[in-house]
Length: 199
Image (cartoon, rainbow, N blue to C red; front, side):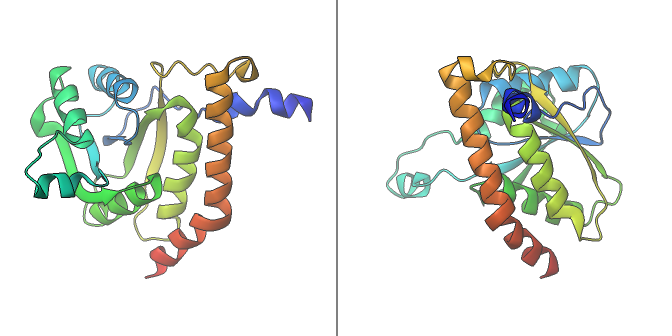
């Protein structure tokens, strides 16, 4: 039991790199660490395309309606990866209003349904998010006619060590948050994904 607790942080990090993929997916959330990792992946020629799902900005649309224009997180990510050397024509932004990794997975699943040649994706995210992200994507695609292999590339810029996670307040918060979200997915959101796969 004690050993399991010690490994709770490292288990969250799923690292399949370096592997080659048809495209990488930058999962939305924290920007700087994921963008930097995506740039490294591209420079190593591990993936030539970048997929980004538009992230929900909450009351952003109401601001727009009132004439206040701010740069969305999605556009910030796009601009940052371009500034780091990824060509604009290599970036695919999928329309949506994603509020979760589950919604990102569903939007990408719909997009890939007509892209049979794109069957290997590299998920780029913050280190502690990668295990849950891979579980969600594999579940989302599991019962569809779209066979896709998912690999993970955890950002080395997220400052998450995993080992000795209980010694640092930020890592305690990250680990506990991830396990709560994982339990929520396994007991609640997984059913929604299954229902959407059959619809």
